[in-house]
Length: 367
Image 1 (cartoon, rainbow, N blue to C red):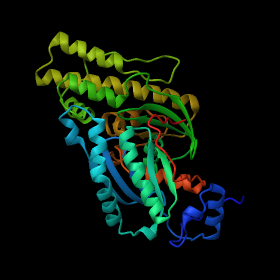
Image 2 (image 1 turned 180 degrees about the vertical axis):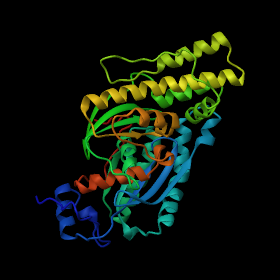
Image 3 (image 1 turned 90 degrees about the vertical axis):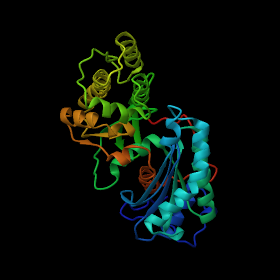
Image 4 (image 1 turned 30 degrees about the vertical axis):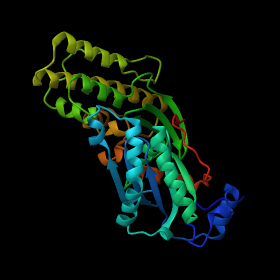
């Protein structure tokens, strides 16, 4: 089977019916036969948690549109995400969000080469909405479908815009559900070095904010409160020596006991506790990432995930890193569909295409 030239972007002509060439090998032959030298536009769809997102990305880097319908205000009244509420809201907003992304990008269906969608990890009900919308569009328009790992998508947010990551690189993925340290040696080549053994960093921020009465979502709330405080309280760090894993449940418990003992109710004490809690999380994330980077001799560090938008984390890791650090802008750290489309671009270039029978994997891992 001949390889597809890497310098050519392959797009399906509108007349090509993808359903007649479902197998990857057949599809590669069709691509070679109908190759068109032009830009490649991918529609990405993301519904893994509580944001409904769609985006059109050109050549894996140029964001033509990115629409995100957030459910933060809906879930804030419950102090966290309610899965059933999230999936029902996706049903309401999915198609309008896709239509808005297409309109903002000023493209028609004949301009789209691939449909990309998050298949996991995430909330099962939420994932199902996005995947079924993507299947319906791909089937109706005769377009190839690519399922994307949400965590891999977060990493590929670093390829959007003018960023030029280099391999091998070390990826720190920090979000509400994950804290993973991953070695990336090439496109699609990952080795997970460490993960959280209990609470993820984002989850710890949410729980810490709840303890301090700061509201939801916890990450931005604690970051804002910490600006008025000094990190002087003696909160623990779980170093887990000999391992690249993380643990934040003990820190959360220590904060709870501190509040119970001191009765942290006034603003100065809350700010001091928020700053101390944030610094404890940042210390562990940065120190363990630096240790792994030096041990492995990587050329770059990539931050990814919602917690990567935390300015204290970004400043601290940039200041202490022995190698360059890439951090996506805040709107690309949180869940979005542009990162899913960017990731799918590299899947497509390597010939990785999924069938219309693709299913969700709620507990999908990376590496």
